[in-house]
Length: 418
Ligand SMILES: *Cc1c(COP(=O)(O)O)cnc(C)c1O
Figure 1 (cartoon, rainbow, N blue to C red):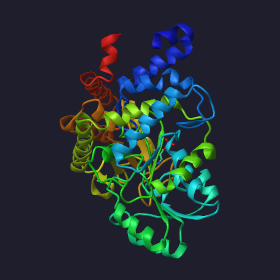
Figure 2: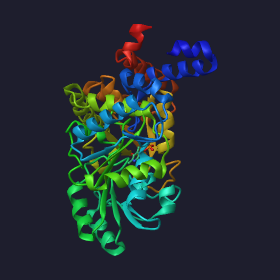
Figure 3: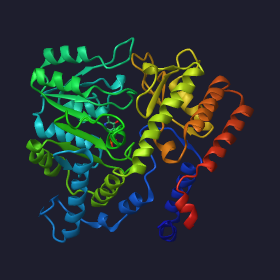
Figure 4: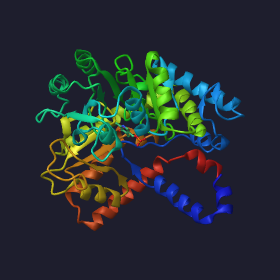
């Protein structure tokens, strides 16, 4: 495929070649990223992207949809089987679209919603002021305890009783612990609201049964397919049968037009893979790697938000180290380790600076790295943080990162065929 592109447009092909090289020669610890298998890439770049197919299987607004219907029906069935869900909509283009559609399906503009604070680990699509979600609905936010940094369910309960939300949203982007879905369900029932759980980050761990599933508790579950789940780019909605037609109408024609059939094909492949023992093993290893990496950083003296992790991500508080989130991110990028600056709860710094750094293990685990490598990388990070201005040291660390990249090649299959 890359050869076809090179022939047609070498400017784009050259940028793509650099990107491939960049991915191969860096250690990706961005918690929201992963490396999708080539079978998923193949589906994503398939001729299905030529197809316009407004509507749903059997009810389309364009001719020629027999195989489009077949692929969408297969993706829906696999999603339902994988997550034991009553209904699945596979059309959302992204996680934000999925959340928007759930709000739009069930609420009126201006209705109250209760969700987790963005700066305590929530997501922009949970009512941030700069998001359309924040413009359209009246959000209030619960957060985490100042001492334990765990979700304050009592605060959520009292806010729910005071504000009478029509919907309660659970789920987060930088929360390293398990979320108590049963507790959120209880609060939701006490105030007669709907419960939406956004499991974007943890969908792979849930699919593999490594951590509890929100599906039995929530009226709606949204997620993205490209994080721990290892699929291509896209969003998803699961819901109870009673809400199926409202949800479907909120996606099309409510908030989207033609679905991306090539992404739906990739989702079908993704859900099939997610039922395999190999996938389960990878997901278990993601958590084992995260715990090991957290332990190694903790032993080196770093303060871990909540004291550790139960999932795929680790958030460290850099206060007292002389580094900020942004400078730490840049420093690690210099030696080939990719992370992202992230606010910690009650962070005095702005979101562009931050006191925290978020690490994730999904992409490294996909690449085959295990506990010994987590210890090695934690040691590299610690050395870099201890002497950020020692260029000789940084060069040696960069070489060590390259050794790891070569020992655990990304997309070996590609190298074998080219
Ligand atoms: C990553 C994430 C999303 C993202 O959706 P995109 O639109 O695909 O970027 C939504 N919700 C949460 C909690 C996330 O972490």
